[in-house]
Length: 218
Image (tube, rainbow, N blue to C red; front, side, top):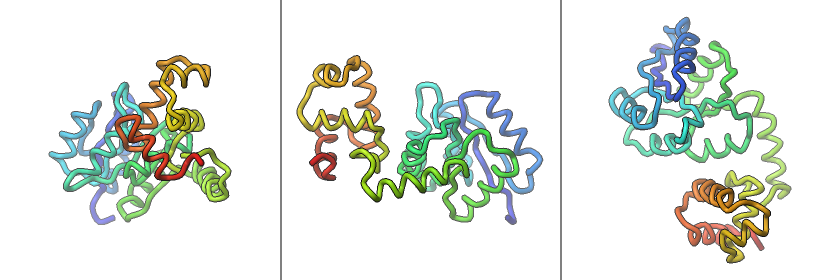
């Protein structure tokens, strides 16, 4: 590329940020780190002030979610491209990342040359996914097309979250869901928070509405 890709690093571990900076340093003519953030608030301030080309964001940052940050950045007047960098080699995370507006999902074992190439591909308008996940995602897509997954899988719901949602649709309380699935009530609440986020809703009634509208449970 004629000018370097300008990148902001977002990770709550200083050693990870330092490692990424060191890994990208030999490629300064192609990629330039213009800022680093260890939390969501700082990341928003940096992106707003620096207008980077790409935000390279960790999926999990303590109690914060890189996926939520991705959604926030995507809503900015001039959004950067967002690439999620993660240790989680789970295709469900990829689906959720793409639904959140990410331009890519890479694993933290990526080396410097590949990372630089992938960032350049993102700047060229491509959506990039770690090569070790690409084949599994293609197979999952084929299975989804054949209807071999559980209801809601196409929206990123795990099998357990789908089970919880089906019991919400049936009108069960949190306690009744916990009893039915042999789970603790706090675990049920955790599943509910996750499925609310994935369905982009804020309460039980809205989640049930989405499930019924999409015909998930017939």
